[in-house]
Length: 176
Image: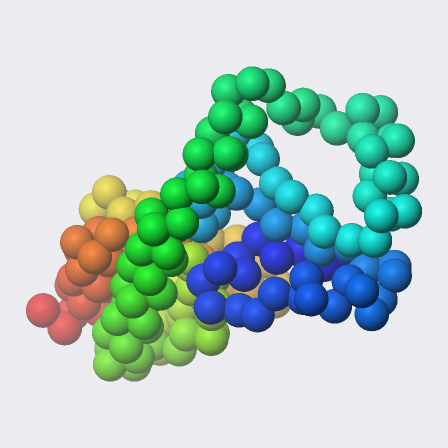
């Protein structure tokens, strides 16, 4: 099973491989690039027998059953290709700008093809940066775990939101 939750922000889908690999399921969500997080709608692509197996057992473990509103929202989102493409372009453009700004501040940013980046500051401890951003009303995610404890997860917002984020990082770092 391959999760492609962020595929629309610059990756290459593996859906084309399902005919070559009969045991491959590719799952995608409408939560990210289609802006439907609250509806909990997704899609799965795979060989017919795998899909049939999922259909057979889905109600025994799926706590997110789809109602008519969710189905209507999903249908409308899939039909509005222009909005979808523009949303993806905006996220990619804003992500690239944000990464450039962070790197100019000396930060390390893990390459991302998602709607978020993982960033660490060279001189400011991650937890302190997280707390000071929070005090300024800027919400990012901090996970005090071994492999990512030195990184913040920063979701890509609007251009203005990301400018405020960068300005705050500059201020916290004593650059402004």
